[in-house]
Amino acid sequence: MLKVLGIDVTSDLLERWVDWLAPDEQPFFVTRKQATAWKLTTDDREPSREDRDTYRTYAVDPKAARTAWLSQEVYDALPKATRAALVRAQVGYDRGAVPTVRKWSRIVGPEVRQQADGYRFVWWKSLLREPARVLPDVVSEDLGPSRHAEVRTWPAALPRVRELAGTFPDGSGPNCFGTVMAACGVDGAESVWMVREPFEEWLANHTERGGKDDVPGTVFVWRDAARLVQHAALTIGDGWMLHKPSQSWMTPRKVRTVAEVKRATRTAGWRLERHKLVA
Image (cartoon, rainbow, N blue to C red; front, side, top):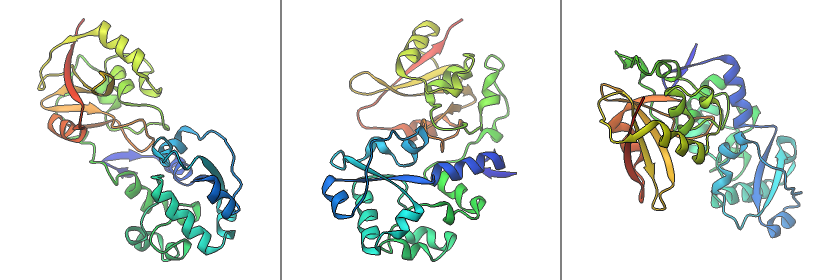
């Protein structure tokens, strides 16, 4: 079985990754002036959760207020100069999934050099003919592996931790809050996009301030300057911690050391607080 970040990935999940990385139609963000100049039809359809995470729609420059949803057939039919300008614009507007030709041409093939400006390209299914070669590198590009195989003692008081550790979600949505709540016994929490309010309610009802880093059951909570909770993770003993880095389909529920999670989560303006589970 294919392993990605030290985690088993089924052929079914790999096929879904192909659809999420390279949907049949993908969004290109443009200004009204660009849409007119490049003869692009735009519409206001809502992106799926997977689209949102693949293309980082939440981070796109707001001045690119129009969206053109293009298939590969329509994209390929555009003049090459238009494709080049369109792809460069996506980089400028901070859209996700606009990788560099330099990094990927040897893996995907030389055709990516001709797709747009020779420096950047966009993913289509035609470039993913060997998904087992490409997708693992895409998914693991910015993430360290899950180290669940190194854990020697799993916490008896948190029986679901072992079940959740080293698993990918079935799509975008499941996040750090739901992962912590599920590991602590909340049925189904690992499968939903858990927003702040129910997580804060659970935290207030099931924990109290305090806790140690080297024992199971300490909930780490990171808050921003406005006191809004931004991330959460759970110690599982012996210096290990369970967390899910984001709500994206690419991020697994993984085990890292406490030090690794603290280092990866360090963000200007965030403060860490600890809570311990109570009966």
